[in-house]
Image (cartoon, rainbow, N blue to C red; front, top):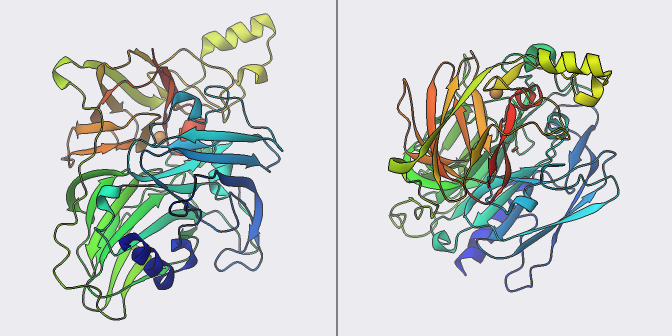
Length: 466
Ligand code: C2O
Ligand code: CU
C-alpha cells in the first residue's frame, strides 16, 4: 500500500522522468523488459532543432525498477547501425551477463537481440549502458537507470526521485559537436556545454512540506565530475554507488563519471533546496527541490533516514593480498610496433592506430571495442581477499570502475574519506587510494577509468578471477 501511495505521489508531483518507466506490475509474472536501442530525435532545451539521441525507449531517461533478488529479464533489441551490448554498471551479475563485447559475450549485431537474465543481488541505484563506442553512445544519451528496490526500505521515504545528470555537446541547431577531442582525451575529458538533469535545464522536483525525500543522483556524463553543493536545506548522502553508508553531508561530495549518490533530506516547511555543481568558479545550479502543497504525514515521523546496511562479501583485511595499480600517461608499445612492422601486420589490425594517452601499470589497452585481449592486469582467486592500491601519477582525476564487484573504499593519502562501498572510485591527482574486495565469480572483469576518453585511449584493463 505504502509503495503505491509513494508511486502515485511521484507521478503527480514531478516531471515525467520520475515515473518508473518500465516497472513491473505488482503480482504480475516477470515479463522481460524490452530495451530497444535506436536513434530517436528529441529537441534538447534551448535548441532550434532536434538532436539524434540514442535511447532505449521513447522517454528519457529510461528508469527500470526491479525487486532485489528476484529474477530479472531484459531483452536488448539492437536498432542501431552498429553492434551493441548492455553493461549493468555496478550490479554483481554473472560473468556472462556483464555485457562486454568479445569478453563476456558476442557483440549484438544490428537487427539482432540478446536476453539478459539475472537476479540482482544487492539493492541500490545502478545504471546501464553499452560497452562499445561508449563515448559516442553515452554522449547521445544511450544509458538507463536501474533501481533495485529493497523491501527493507519500502516505507522510509515519501518521495523517491531519479536525477540523471548529463551535459550535451550540442550546437544551437541541435546537431552534435565532436564527442571527443585529442585535447580533451589527453587531459580532463571533453565536456558538454548544455548541462542538464533528466534532460532539462534546472528542473524542479516538487515535494510536500516535511516529506522524506530520497534523490537518486546518477552521473551519466562521460567526463564531468560535479561536486554537490546544497543550499536551503540539509542533505545527506545515504548510499554511494547504491550501497548504504553511514550518512554524511552531501555538500562537498564529488561525483565522478558513473558514480551515484543517494541523497536524503526532509523537506523544509516552505521554500526550495538547490543542488548545484560547486566544482566551478561560480556554483552551477543543477536542479531544485521545491516545497509546495499540504504537509504530508505526521511531522517527526521521519526518524532516521539511514538505509539498512549493505550485505556484501566482507574482505578479510588481515589476510588480503596487495595489488598495485599505477595510473599513468601512456604510449604505444615500441616492441609491438616493431613486431608489427617486421611481420607486415597492419597497424589497424592491432589497434595501433588508436591514440594512446593513458595506461595502467604502464600497459595501455586502447580502443572502443575489446577484440584484442591483452594479458590481465592481475590474477585473482575466487573467494580470496585483495587490497588494490591505486596510485595516480597524473594531474587529472580518474574515476576507476571495476566490473562485477562491489569494493570497500579504505582510504586515500592526503584526505579523509567517509567509510563507504563503491564500484567506481575517484582517484585524485598524485594520491594513493586503497580499496578492498573479495574476488567474485571466475572471469575477465574489466577495470577502467570511466572518463570514457581515458578508457578509450588506454586506461583500461581487466582482472582475471579463476
Ligand atoms: Cu560503466 Cu566498464 O563501465
Ligand atoms: Cu581517467
